[in-house]
Image (cartoon, rainbow over all chains, first blue to last red; front, side):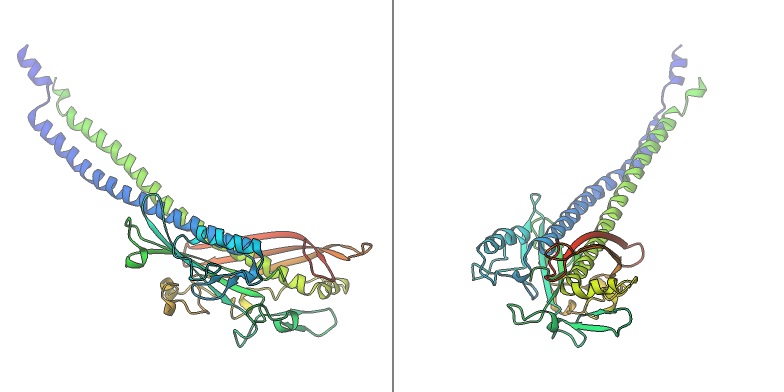
Length: 210
Length: 178
């Protein structure tokens, strides 16, 4: 009877072999888990960056008044028509879009550049470049054409269609580029991280207000 | 009795195979997430290009409402907004994606000159149609239906496209759009 019981048990060699196989499997699993946590944080930061870029571009394309966006890298935000509501909007909206660092010595002027830190401690730098696509900005500025049936093609230049704006330019379109740069290491400013990641959004805003 | 020998190894192999399957699934799920994040970005870029096209179209419509109406009144049945095409304007032409665009960086002005872009892409007005004209009112108003399209190219498998359709009413004398 005792002899039979010994035969049905697990031998020492089997246990050792089982542990060896288990170890071989568990080791890459742990490596995978560590990598997975890092990947999750990477996707998290990328998602935050995408949503921040979208928030900024939505605000600039659909909410910020045309005349309040000044060209530059970084661009500026300033109400040049002294409308109280627009001034209040800029003061509230721009710090929400860019975080800290978008203020300038003039309390009514903000710049399109700032630093934002999420709850988990990752830092995101957002910057916006605006280029005026005005009459004098290029040797081949934007113009409009019209082909009336039976007539020769008509050409309309910007300077024929609108007066100069508050910046002294014949301008109807602005090129907007949004960049959000971030570090995948907590509490590190992306401008100090050579391995920082970036995403971009590009759009062209037309003057539909004048 | 001999049939039970080696059961531990079999059990561990089954267990190991199960774990490997679960983690392989998780790995592929993570890869999908990375791909989806990228696709979201390119699709979003196409969305803003489509809105850029629509704003560009509205700009022409409100600046030249009389000319636009006259085009349709004279029997024009083509696309009077065919010049709203980013490839026809030097400053709007994003072109096709080139490797050097990967280095685009607003934080380094040398890497972000005015005529360069971080993406390749284009937009255009595909069609515009006069849907109606209200002549009996004090302020003459024309209705238009505009279709715009956009494409983004940031390399192989990094592409997106979008289409926008809007109907609008334009005051022919003032160019006001509702």
